[in-house]
Length: 337
Image 1: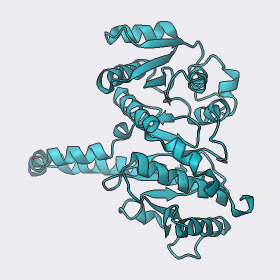
Image 2: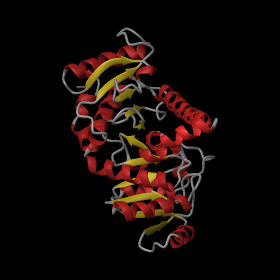
Image 3: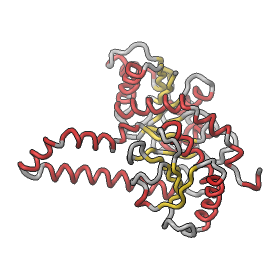
Image 4: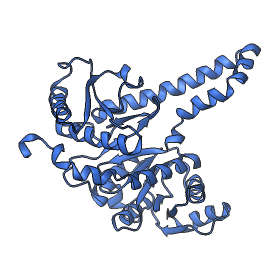
């Protein structure tokens, strides 16, 4: 197993990226190729006391100010573009990048290509909820969607939840403004009918419409929505988690009695914090691309990169892409069958 890592992507590149890569090689036993400016990456590797990681020289860097739709085409020698070409050419099993989300999605679509028959790739983060977490698909890749896109998101999310999240029969819900079958606009009505038909055929486990309050209750394993709504939900969730953790800290540091209570609960509070830590998940899978690509958080530190590599390994080993390919005919509108 070889994981290709964009060493120049993200706010803390290349030092933290290299640290995470070295840890992944040592603890996960995977081969790693770091792509980036040779002298900078090799200096970081030397600082980590590591001399057995392959480095691919790439002289350019995709920045957040670059146009996402053209970045990897204009900067063909960027670490991101080179990493994606290496994946396409079979020089690795997955790519991990903490660089520009838009550029990575566009680059993966144009270079690695979508799975044949998939209309749009989707970003599918796993949010903290219950034993397995809950997948949100899409969270920003596709602001405007058709019912067919959402049908395909439901299938891909269901396969992901089964293969990588450990859900035997993933419960799929359509995010809406109410749980009644008639709720929502035309997009939701059309999508509901498609998901219901797929469920009646036994292809997915569609439980119907869900509201935002249902997302973290364990009622659902896969939340299907358009990228605009999904991104709002994702960012709101991240903000609420930060606020909650800050508020809890304030409560426990309020007085001596509360500090004593914090000591008693330290272990359990640590576990709770860990379940809400983006570093533990590592990244967001780009589902629908023909080979595994994982987008790590832009502010990733070494721990986050390590987790993203671990996620990429599981993705590559899961057989998810083969499952999508095998079921593609069931993921299209009836008129095309």
